[in-house]
Length: 471
Image 1 (tube, rainbow, N blue to C red):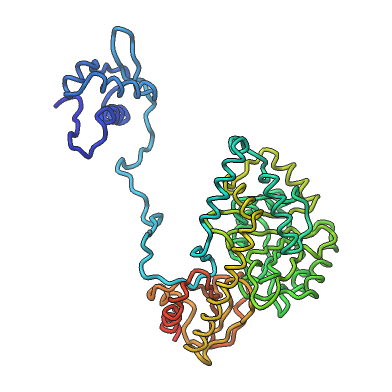
Image 2: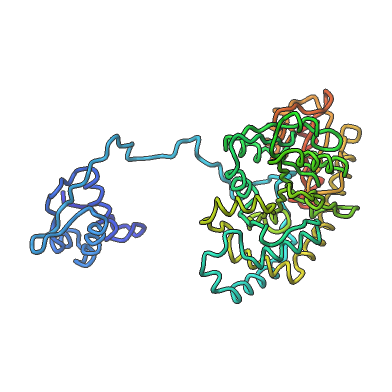
């Protein structure tokens, strides 16, 4: 048998790659010993029926990676390489529990998820124009790392926009842009003392809860009353930070009234290091009512950290979020992250500036508000028509989801299993209960119903599937 065997079928790799891999594997498997001489380039080329240049390329790569060495006029030799210890099975396979069940077609699934957004009406042509403008106008900036908080012009545009739409009072310097709200919250909390106690809404956003727990904080789930987060429980928790969604509580949809907002702000002023993190995740969407100003707009003591996102209004995959830091918190942030690089795509950040500046963003929000309102009304109408007295909907005209109660003898586990069988994506309230139990009478269950990503013509079909799951 020869020194190497090559596969001459058409689907194989280039010959020099086969030679390289063959010799490398022989060395790693210790079939070739240290300082053992290899065939000359011409000898190996004649044996394999390839050109000398092909063998030369393979040998050069092996030399570059340290597998072999050459001695002038003597030839090529195997390097003295340290042996592997405790080698795994050479035929390695990913463990079954780590494999992903990926179905690109998504089959015949229908979604009533709260997490999606409808991109069918997104003005891609307008966005591409803004992207081209960003490339034309900012070649120098795109070749550099840029400011860790994001381009100043984009932060200025965002600060002006949220002042007009949400009443947020801030300077561009206070805005930190990042690739998602979770990442920004992680950065924010990494600079805090791990002894801090954090209060979160219950039911609430489970991803924040798990993130903060994994970071080592003491996280206290606080129940809700008819006005939002229970201020008495907040006081009792001894928390320094409170995470809230006052404009559209997630997942119940409650809108926090002015009395509770003032109570929360007063709580923050009673301690030297108390802060409120306001997650304004889908405040752009209000129906039959004007937009409700942010909690931050009422803050006179710089105790509210405001966060917003473009994931619901643009394309979720663009991943652009931002937070507004009070001056003292901003000073700490800059002191801890002097070398941080901006995680968001810089072309997208400049494109966003032009998209907002030329009015495309405002027009898109107006168009989507009307579009979502129509879908929301139709979905609620069909739920009432199908379930009649067996459904109770908390019809709060805001956001991209609502809470609904359904009369059913099934458990949450049974409903979740049946939904998968019927290819219907739904989420029960169980997913968002952190410590408290669902406040619903026996024989009823609660679902968080989203309507952003269900096509209007498929709403009746989705409700029919839901009936089969719950009924």
